[in-house]
Image (cartoon, rainbow, N blue to C red; front, side, top):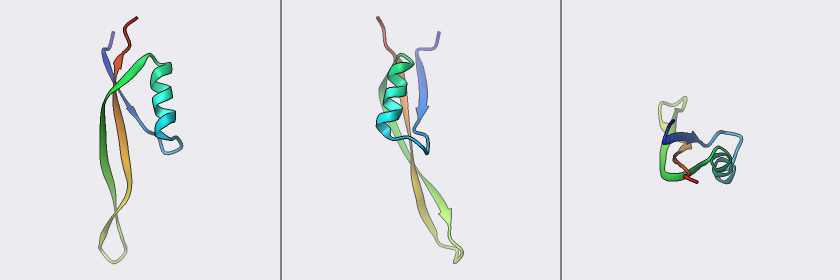
Length: 62
């Protein structure tokens, strides 16, 4: 059985929604990663489109 699993905050959910989904699956967050997602503009400049957030969850032992 997996001890850790990654959970990505989906486009249609909040951070709290993702954390609730983790709890329902039996995991608690132990790490959080954020990385920017960039988009190139028509004039050639680059701007941050959004932040991609991912949690690493550890299995909750009972």
